[in-house]
Length: 262
Image (cartoon, rainbow, N blue to C red):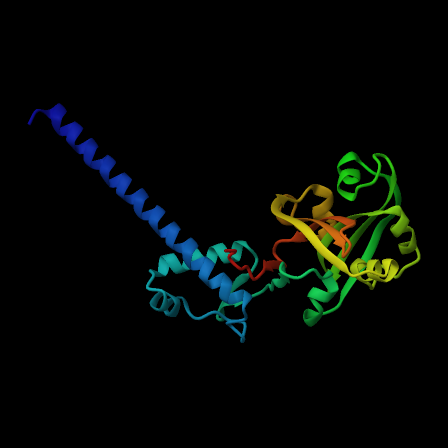
């Protein structure tokens, strides 16, 4: 074989080796992500009541994974702030996510009452001219005054969400003297209107925290937060509460029970 052909053949073998190595790394990364998803679910459902995960070798055997895959999966959970590696102890749970149901219309304190006390810091409150998108959703004339409320909501003292709320002023005026620090707006709306809340339209997406939101929520700048946009209606169909809620993604998990329509 001529020298040039040998060189080409050797280069081809090298390329094949590199491609195979990259494929193995990609496969291990895929398996690590799959394992991290399974372990995350167990973390959130309190499957490790003593706060410690099984040894890496035990996880490797249980999930038929290599030790490297297990380590990579734990690294993913560590990056999310859910677990930490302690010398001489192993991998321990260091954070908890609180469940927020999406199949019932409830305020935050009602939703999380089993997990502690929700308190509200009212950062801003007062009438503002309704921006066009707000006026349209609340069915008020463009530029009409609405009540704007901005609250930092804490669970057991830890920042959980930053809520921006718009309410028609004929209803919102009665909220000016209400105990918003300890009471869900939903309960107050029902008391003021004498009606039950009926339904809500929601949109949920992940967004990056802007500098101000991150500072208020005591989260890293640019961290992913869950943005919940919710338009709540009274039982008679009138829209009364438009909210933009930024949840700390590392402290909340959304869940619901869905039925397939026929």
